[in-house]
Image 1: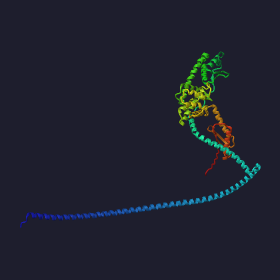
Image 2: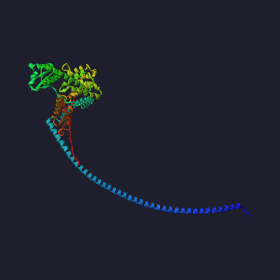
Image 3: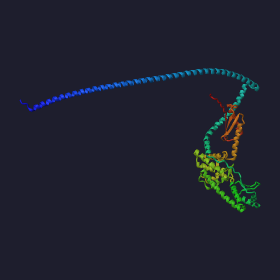
Image 4: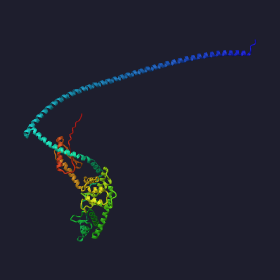
Length: 512
């Protein structure tokens, strides 16, 4: 039987398939066994590592337990030592408290004994007082009730007098309060303007190189001296005073012209009527120039602009005018600055205040030519050019001849008083100021128990230091009242004077 060829092919494929399956099975079994072996080895390795880690963890746990035990023991020892220290401190405090308690008990016993002694002394003093009172009643012929009534009557009269004074003081308190702002403004203004002390000038004296010059000034039959007096309007006083000639004239400008002309004649040496007239004219021109320049400089220093030349010239004449030793031109500039400062403080017109202050005494430049008070004369002069009625009113009223009804008038009057009455401004005012202070201190020092006294605040307060061992607190009050009475009876003064009595007691001890 013949088998076809494709059957052999099928048989070959089937056999190959069986062999492949067998080989695949064998390979798969080998791979599986190999994987099992590797897994077993990996498991053994992991178990070994786990055992090593377990040992390490156990060792670390043991070390941490040992460290915690050591720390706990150290903390226990530290807490125990702290408790022991606190116990020792408590025991020491208990001992100190016990000692203090014993000390307090001893002091209490000592104080009880001293209280008994004081009580005995008080009783003895009371007995002595009663005996003394009985003796005083026998000597005075008055019972204690009668003496008490007399004392009460005296005290009542003093209290009534003091009450009246207190009422007066309370009435003045409102006025003082209203004037407080004004005093502050005045004090600030005075501090801001430090004026020069007065330069005294009373007479004009010309020095001569020799006494023979007197004869040359007189001239033949007195023609030179007559020519000089006629040209200047000044009286020449040539007396026995060696080396000097005195010029006398009520007009300070004329006196200055005569002084300049005379000095130049003496230097020139040619003294005759024609030369005298020439020198007098030159001196007059020079003085006129000086007057104009001084007037302009004064207006510039005061900050006043726009004054007409006539007022400038009249103002400059005040350079040669003195009032109680105070130069009137310097005084006018000072009053202008003071009035301007105060006007700025209270919100008034500063320009008008400066203008009125600068021109307030301009009447003194011509007061010897016109009758009337210089304030009214100055107002009449200024109103020819000044357009502000407030300025004219302030000039006319700064001395009270005209009613003062504007704030500008009060400012100018206050500035004028400050400039004229400050220490050193006027010779006579300074002397009166010093005498007033000396009189206050002398009155205070005349009382017994006064240690020192000081007149302060320009004589508006006197501060008195008393001896504390001689004058008690009530005595200090009585002393102040007595000094006030004596000051009121003895001195004349504006406003009021504050009397302050200071009694000081110091106790010093040292803690050991």
